[in-house]
View 1 (cartoon, rainbow, N blue to C red):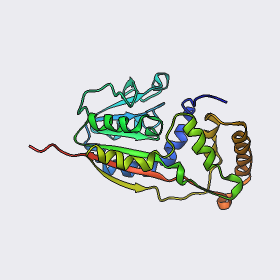
View 2: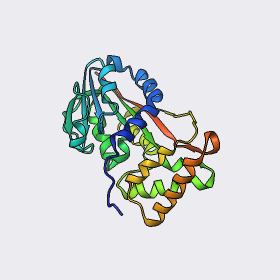
View 3: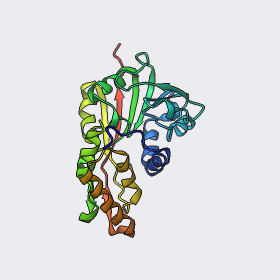
View 4: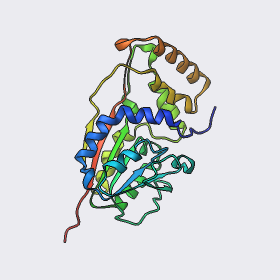
Length: 243
């Protein structure tokens, strides 16, 4: 068993970014990204969304990730910084938009990371977050159900599979004004959704269950299989300071 998951391959992250593109685009519009002058791509990885942020923002973009090697693939127009979400290497009030997509999932301790995000946001700045809630994963029929595998393997790898449901409360504690919606689009299950599990630390029983589910998923057509991962779409605004 692998002790800890590594960053998924760039191709998988690119596919994930493409799947989330409509929801992400709408959320960024609501955050008025075109008017934002200093943007942080938090947990940028290989930069699957960095280029999009750079094209849409009204100013500069900084891509941050713990995986320094991955950052080399980020859009060249963005500054690239290696760092940890729990100790952001920036001054307070440094950004007017912080973006993260499946990034806070991997950042611990979550309360400390949220406090750091609040610190680096300017008054009036906004966090745009797309984060999952694996506890509410819906799958059918039984032969493709992998919810418990996701929960156990993500926790074993150091992630928080319940991050989505925890964020609103943690952000509120930091004094941010929080708005939350849920991804409401259900599509036929795609077999590649299980490819992420292969990069996680699995027991032998979990590996066997994954192989059975993968085989069943590859033989399904259309709506024969259903899989829906609840996704929390969050806009959290740092309140302007009173004079």
